[in-house]
Length: 332
Image (cartoon, rainbow, N blue to C red; front, side):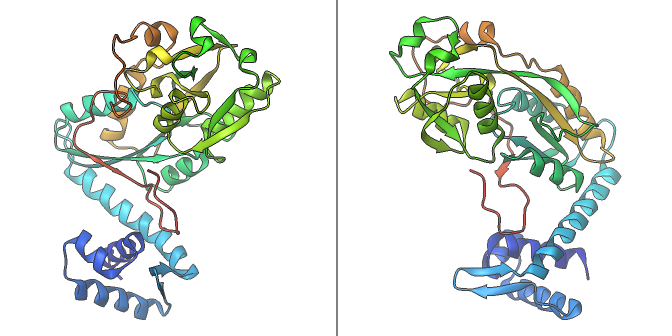
C-alpha cells in the first residue's frame, strides 16, 4: 500500500466517482481505477459499492478511509515540518470554525497570518458540531478548531474570549426603539432557529428556557447569514453572535437582557507546529467582546447587502466541507 493509493481512495470517496476523482487529482482515469483495484486486491476487501448515484464506501471501506485520512494528514504534516523555516512558513494549514463563531475575528487573524507567511496555504472548514470539531482535531485531520465552549470542552482548550449574542429584528419592529431588548418582551414571536445539532440552536433553547419562553419555530437554517436574512424579512426574530452580523445590518440588532455570552475556545491538534502556534497567538490578540458599544456604534447610513462579508476579505483560500469520508453532506 502507498500514500498515493490512500489519496486516490479518499478522492473517490469525496467525489463519488473515479472520473471526478481523476479530474480533481489531475491524473488519467485509468490510473485511478488501477490504483483502487490494486488496493482492494491487496486488502482482500471491497472498499466501494457501485450504486446508481455513484461509488459509495462500504462499511469496511469507511473504516479503512478513516485511517487512510489520518495517514495522509500525518504525511502532509511531516512534509510541512521538514520544509518549514522559522522565517518562511510553507505548506498547508487546515482550520475549522463552528458555524456562527469568530466570523470577524478568524478572517482578521488568518489575513495577518498570510501577510506574515505568504507561502502558507490556508483551507477553512465550517462545522456546526463541537464534538465533530474536537474529533477532527484530535485525529489530526485539521490543525485548529474554533468553537464555543460546551459541556465536553477538552481540558487543553485555549480560551480566546466571550462572544455576546444579539437579537436580529425586522425593519420597523417595535423593539428597535429599545437600547437593549428584554427577552421576555419577545414572548409570542416566531423564531428563526438553527439545525438541531448545532451549538447555536442549543444556545437559543437554553436562553429561552431560562427566561420561561417556548419558541415558536418559523424556520430552521444552517448559516447565520441566512438567519439574519430571514429575520430582516419579517419571518421571525433570531439570536446570533454579534460577530456574525453582516456589515450594514447593525441597525437591525440589539443586545438582550439578561445579557447572553458564550466562551469561545480554540483546540489545536496534537504536537502543533509553528503555523498553528502563530495562528493561536493571533486569535488570542483579537477582540472577542463585540458588544453593543462596538456593534451599535457602527450603524450605517445606508443598509448594505447581506452578501457583504462580515469581515475583511480572506486571502485566497478554499472554503470546503469538513474532511469526512463517511457519507457526510457538505456544509454550505
